[in-house]
Length: 570
Image (cartoon, rainbow, N blue to C red; front, top):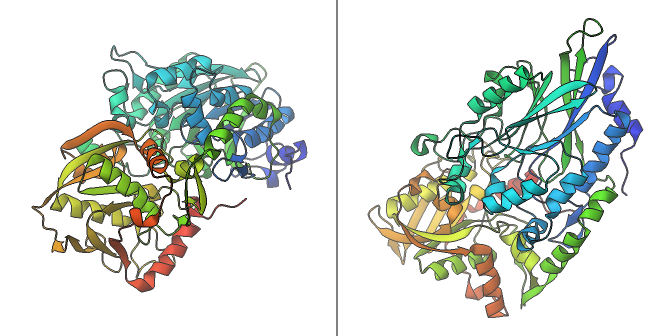
């Protein structure tokens, strides 16, 4: 049953009563004022409470549900709420794909964010995926600024707005934005010579100082960067600054009251470094963070000072959808439903990805074999992006292919590698599994995302998770002959991985031998249409296994308990 978030709930959360205040925030009496910073991040096109893969309502997420929460807060606290987003909105859900396909029409994601009355948003790395012209059209349509203080044009000027000033309750509030430098690897073909994304901290420091000079009493930084996690690329070899620096910014940059961060698809309600509050809401508009700042002044007309701060997370699950968001996205929603439900072909059997990271499966091999054949390569590598992907028996739709391969901008490449590079590649991938003797009930390393565990087709191998990390690949062979370091192979893979994405530094310098700029998802769509009827035996070539057998079941259960790998629920 859906439930609205009423004013009573907001009042209990944000107004008075120490028992109901966010952690670290004490009630204040006298000449005081409260401000609230509501935030989202990494929505990836999930504007509505609708699961386009299952083609049914989704009660757990969607900007339309988040806005119900934020608007309740606005009604309870008029002229006291700032609403921001930390980036990655223009790519992801099928609605975002349709927005790109129909780019001559108003962007439904921007239309929804306009209707939500955002005050500002950081530019995320995925905002660059469809090229700068697409991003700039979105910026032109937005009624709020998209910010990136650390992105520069070739002439040294800011490529995008760095910060903005607004007023709430008579208080001047500055919002500073920043984005991860990793885009210079992942989208270098779109950015090279056009935009240079630099180290976040120095640019934020300059923007914060400028905002303070211009009278900002409160400074909020929204950054598309994780807290302090390791970069997915080699910062030494690439020369790029670190990917995840929110904690560093809080430590090193004075004058920041709140940092809203994202990028890592995690959730952190409330943490404080020095005098800076840090918070991260859940991705896909599954939650909103609400930070509360208390300001006081010693006398009427005196300067305001932030004296306490705290935040909490409110989840979108079960909240009603905002009618304005539903209305402005209705046309795009209908086009998206038609797009994802269109049949492409059929299959007589069920194909499932739920166990594809612990055993070889036909659905994973379908992707790899299409890549390998198209590139004419010896091998193919790739990740199982969603354990909920499946199709058949019956029609195969666009939704099935989109869930199996969610990145609608990845293109196919092939590189030439040595046997040593191949072994290093597989060993690096096998970090996904923890040491069996140390974590018998938690076999998956949560710091290694599932999309960074790659499978390779074209060679036979075993991943022995009873062995130490770095020496887990056994029985590596091709055509019955053991692979040696001096062997050479061509390997098909996506452009993200070829460019070093995910930390696969052993590919650095590997010559590119195939690049026709073919979008991988479209190749899969074309294959289904060409075949008409898909049969597992046309693609399934069992070539890898997890060992020992006794750990496969526990590893599967550990994997399915992780937040992003749990079975889909209505």
